[in-house]
Image (cartoon, rainbow, N blue to C red; front, side, top):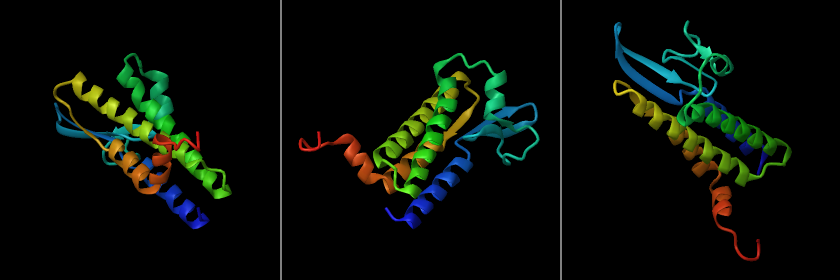
Length: 158
């Protein structure tokens, strides 16, 4: 893969990591409110510079992560960080595209699990999972060959 294409994919992954991964809507005492879970923290939908924004490490230090679906958000963020690191290895010609593709698929799956668990925990929440769509789209568009080789190995390659 060319260096230019590797840089473009890396920038695309950085954009995916900067966007909200799960958007939630609820009605509270202040009316209709929106919040978002990002790959690196959670806070108001207005963005990570909001006054109530909490970074993921701080959240993990104070939160009680006791159910499987609450563990899925940090797990998905970790898998995405690993995919970002794997994609960065393409800059030096050492990336295994199957690994990057698999990490993106698993990250999207973990975030889908988180969104489903969050929606099931409270009936007043409207949950929009964005990360599965973003991660799976990047995996399909940029790593289609890696996904194909990940799923199917010809007998000569085994």
